Structures are given as structure tokens and as C-alpha cells.
Amino acid sequence: MPEAALVSTPPGLRARRVGLAFACLLFAFLYGRYLVGFSPSGGDIVNQYLPYQHLIRNALRQGGPPYWNAFTFCGRPLMADIQIGVLYPPNWLHWLLPLPLSFALVLALHGAWMIAGCWLLGRHWRLRASAIALATVLFCASPFFSYKLARGVILFIYVGAWWPWLVLAVSRLAARPNFGRMAALAVALTFSLLAGSPQITFYGWIITLAVGLALPVAAGEAPAALRWLRRALWIGGAFAAALALAAPQIAQTYHFIANSFERGAGASWDYVTDGSLSPHLFWLLANPALLGIGFREGYYFGSSLDVGESCFYDPLWIAALLVPLGLVLWGRRPAPAPVASVDSVADDSSRLYARLTWLAVAGLVLGVALAPGRYSPVFKLFYDIVPGFNRFRVPARLMVFFMTGLAVLAALVYQAFLERGLARRSLGMLLVGGTAAALALLWITFAMQNVIEYTVNREYWAGMPPELRTAYTEAIGRHAFWVALRASIGVILAAAALWALNRPGGGRDVLSPDRVGLPAAGRASRRPHPLAR
Image (cartoon, rainbow, N blue to C red; front, side, top):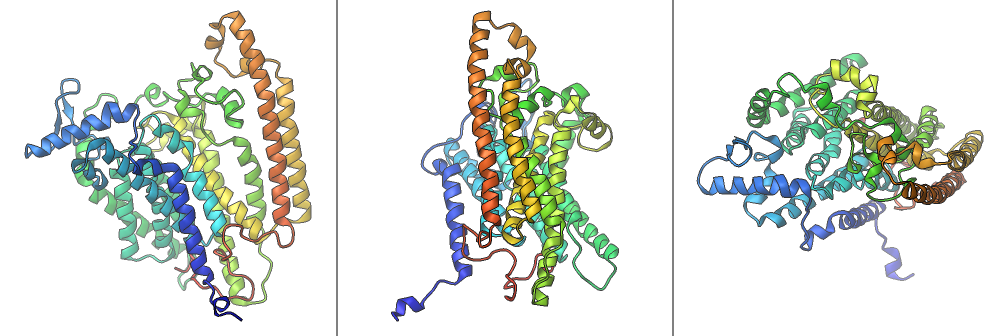
């Protein structure tokens, strides 16, 4: 036998190589252009961030702190505006490099940080490489980040880059509390706050707290309730430490906001609900491309939203398929394995994935319930009772909970198919449901004679010339049919793919030969389980 044939790459090393290659390809696709001379542009960068950084550079060159902006209105605080991010370390690159290119570099660094965080979080949760890749793409490539980038909204990416690291830090702290892990969570919380978007930071902190408190309690001698209470105190300590670390920025910003007539005691209802997701737009969310692709902002006139706040979210019907699958797959106990130690690891992972599934479903429900804003009694309840929800406008951005929950749920469902498969009866129900969904999409297209009239704002439709209205009706009708047909074929293909995965031998990880998830029966785990780390 040739000597080369005796040398093989260890499976763990192959998995890391595949993961690194995938992360590099995703980064090149999303942010590679910012490393070859391109720089982000758009409204907010041109109108706010670039001029503000010029002011900061000038103030520092004159030897003074950048406290004041004399060029906006009659003057306003500069450093106290948290969106400018004077105390956020990555922004210090703006003071050293040419400004347009510095924005490109800072943005690329955050994109890489987001992708790396998602991958490490998936490894910590012992997901398979392909499941991690699926969640990473759905989260990092979500138009919630990418589409807003086209309009110069870079702060969402800055803060969103810290979300996976927040969840990773709180997961590690929940598994084995100590001062080092508490400090790591506190630092991640601090950086996410200083990144410059308090609204997205607020939502990220909610997710972090929910994950930290909902994860299963690891085994121990003390009663489970006491161990959970200790965990809660450690997490609370991390949040308190983060607020202390960010105090130099928080103190200025709080004083700045307290003197605002709009924000001193919370913003008004009309201000906060500006940007609510109108109920008629949920039809577009059911199939975002149904009424055309691109910038037909007429569809959104009168909804208090522009196209950038509402048209890009993940289709709702995907969640309608993933939710029951996730609950069925992770709601039942695993089959007993011949090796006791392996069975215990599998059972612990089942508890972890079941909790994560419920958290993901809660994110989906929360996003859909709160995003309508002024049209939702649930949002009114949160506005009146829950601190923080009376501070931020554009409730439609709460669909970020939906987007994040969908990414996690997709990875968990895919992992479940690879690990467990479906019972024959459940699989049959899946095929029947998928076929029914495909037929429903086609039926809706035929049932609605003038589909555009049911979706477009009435004022916009009434102001359209009759001949143009007729042309629009015919064109959109044809387009709606083909989009519905395409979506129906996609549903059927998805059901067929799940069937193929469920066949014997069909659960092999297509992205990596190494089993990054649970160890197979009869093979000991090479890494400690996340609940025990």
C-alpha cells in the first residue's frame, strides 16, 4: 500500500477546514468588495456618520474632546449622541485612516465578526456543520442587515455582529458560571451598547437574557431551582458590570435624552408607532416577491413604512412548516443507545434543542405580534407595561425577532432530520401539508381577480390613471401567477428533500464528513457537552 494512502486528515481538522472555507466564501460574498476599494454609501453615511467623524477628527486635532456639534440646528451634543460611537473602539480607525475607506474596513470587520460568532455558537451547541452553515447564512445574509446597508444604515450590522457572541457568552456562563465567563459576557454587552444603535442593542439584550434563563440547568448536587437562581444572579451581575463599563457614554446620553421633550418620559404613542407594519403588508410577507421585485414603493404608501422597512423579511409560510416540524422532532425522546454515556449526552442535547426550539418559536410569535405596532393590542400592552418599548420607533423592526428565530429554527429542524428522522405517519403528514400549501398558493392567485387592489394602499390606487391601472392589473396578475407557481414548486421540492433526508442513509452531513453534532452510538464524545462546559 502506498505510504500516502496511510496518511489521512483527522475528521475534526477536516470539519474546521470546511467551516473556515465556508466562512470565507460567505464573507467574500457579503463583504468582500469592501476590501478591494469599495466603500459603503447611502443616506445615513453621507448625511450623518461621515460628517460627524470629520467633526471628531477636527476636535481631536485641536487638542480637545469632541463634546459639541456646532453645525446642527443651533448646536447639539456630539459625544453624547451614542449613534456616533466616540467611545466604541472599532470607530477609532476613522481617526487614523481616510474616512470613506475606514468605513469599509470597519464594516468588513463587523461582518467577519458576525460570521465567526455564528459558527462558534453553533459549535458550542454541538450542531452539525451543515446546520451551522444554514443558520449562519439565514442570519448574516438576512436583508434586515444587507438591505438597510444599501441605504447607509450600518449601525444595525455593528450591533448585530455582537448578537451571536452575546448568546455564546451567556450560554457558556449558564453552563458553568465563573468570574471569567461573567466578564466575557459583560464585555460583549458593553461593546454591543457602544456600537451605536440602542434599539437593536435593546432587542439583542432581550434575546441574551431569554436564552440565558431558558437553557436547561446542568446536573449538580444542589436543587435545580437553586442552581437556576445562581445562574440568574451571575447573568444579572454581567449586565450590571456592562452598564458600569459603559457609564461614561450612558451618563452623557441619558442627560442628552432627558432634556428632549419627546424622550424625557418616553416617546409619544404616535412617535413610537411611526413605522408600524400594516396588516395588509402581511400578504407581502407571505410571499415577498408576489407583487414584484424591487422598489415599487407604491405598495407601501400610507402604511407609514417605506420599502426598506417592510418588504425584505423572510416568508411567513416557511415558519408555518418549520414550527410543527421542530416541535414534533425535538418534542419526543431519543431512541435509547447501546452505550450509556452516549445516551446521556444525546438526552442532554435533546433537552437543549427542545428549549432552543421553543425559544425560536417564541421569537417568531413575538415578532409577528409586535411588528404591527399601532394595529396590535400586544404592542400597546408592551408599550404601557414593559420598560424600553416606549423609547424606540418603527415597530416593524421587531421582525428581527422573527428573522433570528427562523434562522435558529431552520438549523434545529435540519439537525433533527439528520439525527432522528420522522416517523412514517409524520412524514406522510408533511407531504400532504406541503402539497396543500402549494395548491393554496395557486388557488389564492386565481381567487383574487385583482390581486393588487387587495394589497396596494387605497389612496395610491385611486390616484392612478385608469389606463395605467388596467395595465398594472394585467401585468401584476400574470406575475402573481408565475410567482405562485414557482413558490408551489419550491414547497413540493422542499417536501421531497425532507423525504430524501429521512431515508435510511440519507442523514449524512452534506457539508462535512465529521459529525460535529452528537456522537454516534458506540463512540464516545470528543468534546464536553455544552450543558457541562
